[in-house]
Image (cartoon, rainbow, N blue to C red):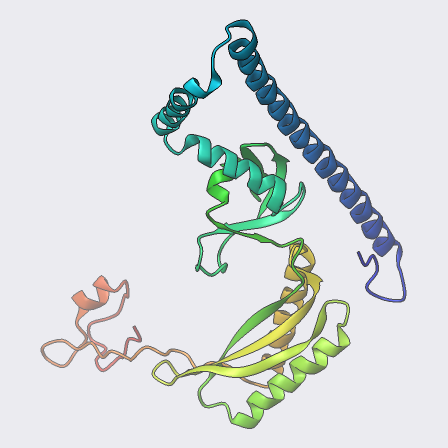
Length: 301
């Protein structure tokens, strides 16, 4: 874990790094205690099951003198019948337990996203793991809501662990007027590169830049710039702050360069009456107060 992003450390940086270290330590301790509890439950279940099997075998073999071979088929039929009556419950329960114990897709304190297989993660909100049990996992939503997810259901979905993910690639979409020359677009990309190099504590560099689409019917072109963040995917606060600063820089640069959209983009409608004058009823319907004697006026809708 990298505590400081720059060589010069201020008091605010030191306090933030200390709080982060204590938070990580608390989460690690909670995760260890949780998995110790899970292993203790599993161990108790195995010991109890083995004791029951040994007790039944002792009763049949020692006390009653029953031939165990004669009871193999009835016992097997009973077990299969119980499993059939219960349906998927035993299998799903055991698979959910093995999922959190063996696979271990997350720990307490991890920020995760749960999505359907093959679905992109865009627009999916993160969840914070607060408790891990044998059959269920309790998570906290960003607005404070607590949700309980069954482990056998999570096993069928895709779990994205943002704490275990590396630095993310952030896409910035910039809509530019279609009349902007290509040289100006190249200058915008170069300016973003210079800004990113100057903010090395937030950004690693510009991965690529391309025109996503040309929408001449709307009078614009869409420029996409892919910037690699220096923060991990779970650090949403620093990521949003860095992204906001970059967007403010781009906005200020466009204003300084005089790159603005011409408004209005909707067609102009001429409203005339039967004798060439303004249709007063139409103007009243549009919320405009005008004198019917003024002809030839234009209303921009």
